[in-house]
Length: 239
Image 1 (tube, rainbow, N blue to C red):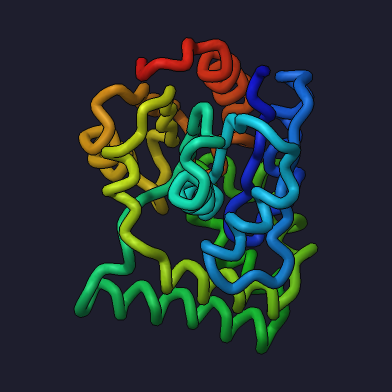
Image 2 (image 1 turned 135 degrees about the vertical axis):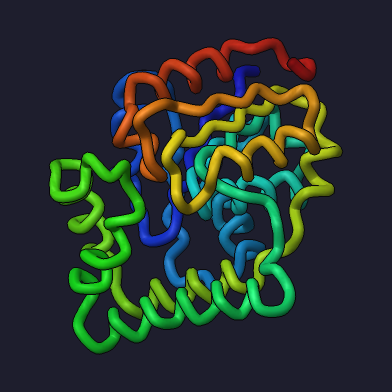
């Protein structure tokens, strides 16, 4: 039985973020919506419930990568292969670094509550794409996607991320094809971060896409779709 493709969007993202890959791959797939879930655990449970029975090829972008790792934690036997795009595996850091992240996220939430999701997105999205794409079609699409979400959903997903577990031990346990992919100019989930993840999983394939920021599925759709096609075709054993 071939593995069913399960696609996991990131923070405030919806099915549109995976649309280029769905069109290019032409495979049956499920794109997950997390609703009002307030934890990665619940998001993973919802994803597993939405997917058909049997093995899964799980691909997650940004926060979706963390959900993908939680799916592996909950149901390792169902994960046939894993792709983690523009994401991370570490828990919220202790001390000043963690507090700085918390304050940054809460400031964006406060802006969304005071001025609306579009105003928040206009500030946040500037760091989500390659600098040359700010103000362009991909940037505008990010604003429109974030505007489709509401403040309670933003608050719930922030809570989930601030309570994220350390998933590095899961990478060490993987015995399946693992793709790690990020944009060379991803300011949120840097190439250095993905190199550290690759160090936890020596059998993984690491791809750094040039001239690309955090929104790799939109910024470099052909490159991402090609890498996913190769990942889906890889033999089941560790690469």
